[in-house]
Image (cartoon, rainbow, N blue to C red; front, side, top):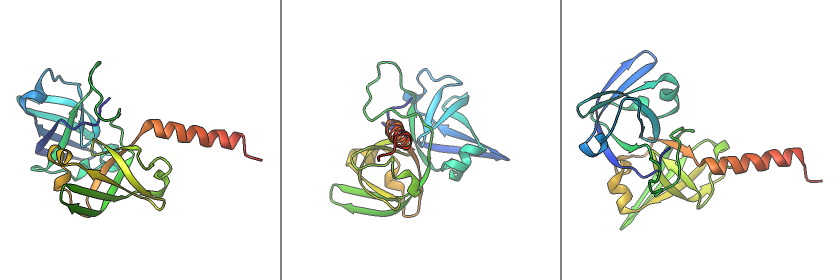
Length: 205
């Protein structure tokens, strides 16, 4: 599990691309390396990955084809920067909201509005997601826990980023048309699905 508070922006050192499998090699600093072991879980751009090798500060992760298809990890190359979060431990402060690192799919940046002390990102996404994406609800974008500002029923929503979020994440590097990883809040999905099932079984007369 993760908290949605990005701990570091890290550099991709290399990407070894094979048929059906990419291996990401990422530069970890000493703080992120603390007690890191092979088999540990780390969120990379919001995607839960498993540490496969540790070579000093060079940490490797294998990414299977299903994950490459469903996320932005297949688009990464050496020199790119990514959001990182180590998995949460018992007793850690939940600064954002609980995340699993299991990505619903990707959304596209459709608009960027920037003004003094205000940075707004707009996204388009599949319309079928919108029953789970609610104003003032939680959403995780590239592993960062954010609050939804507003929604469009046709398949769109926007978030506002404070200066600290811009400093601590890769969002400031994003451009129009870029894809981002989306994890929809699981509690919202459970509530909506439960209500839908109840209404199907007990239709209003």
